[in-house]
Amino acid sequence: MKNPDGSTTSTTTNSATGTVTETTRRPDGSKLVVETKKDGTVTSTETAKDGSTVKTVERPGGVVETTVNQAGGLTASATVADNLLMACYFFVLIAFAGMRFFRARFPHPHIDEVERGSSSGEQAKTQAAAFWSRKDISLKDVAMNIAFAVVVVWVSNLVAGLFSPLAAEGVVSTFQEGLRDFAGKFLGSQYVWITTISVLFATVCSGTAEKMHGSQEIGTYLIYLFLFVIGVPANIYTVLTEAPLFLALTFLMVVVNMLFCFAGARLLKFDLEDAIIASNANIGGPTTAAGMAISQGWSRLVGPAMLVGTLGYVLGTYAGTMVGIALGA
Image (tube, rainbow, N blue to C red):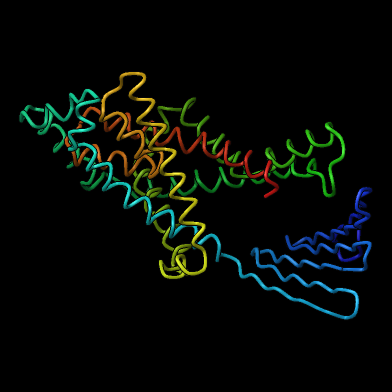
């Protein structure tokens, strides 16, 4: 139902429990969800456009409970926990490269080359110098990179807006409705389209993409700036005292990743260095994986580290969106 202020209201009734849910979505992105149960309990959840929520529960007899959640708290805590475990895990991976236990069970040709003092070490130093050295970036390059990013985001928002109305506003009761709701939420995500358009551009127009100097430097800087901004509101003490489950979750993710990479490398007879760099790319991304390959002198793994890490970003966007939809996020 369209309201005079431009908002839309939908009402659904759960036939099993008798709960009536009224959802009002406003043009600015905020929404109000009111659930009325059979026993007279009314739960109102007001969600602002920044993600902050105010939940009010009115029970029979006049008892009122109000809960306020500020936006960014969970995200900041999750980021701090993730970065903390990631940094610790990198030290573990470096230690693995020198442990007899792993060297006895995996071939390690890159480590042997470095220890023999072959040309691989000098080549790695050259690549490290090229990786961290000043790049030939002009004002035109900066303008082209930023313009490309703006256009991709703009087009992604337009395309996502075409599919988002397919998402169901109430309870999904049939398979067809569920399939349509999934398509609306997945294809209605701007991040899915940002990833898709960027990958298609880099694949189809690879020559043009190579001429966009400075894209890696600008992108990496903005990623680090983004992580810094969302991580500032939280600290390690806050994570330990108020959100310890985030540490447990990130620890579980790291352990599962480590077991998968090293067990897979063992079964498929991959090198120890391959397992270490692949595991690093899964946890930290292409930049940290390439940095570790350079620091250890594994020059032939710098390129694969960047490719595997970038591929992980692409597949992770799709898989993460699907998991979030399945879990009702």
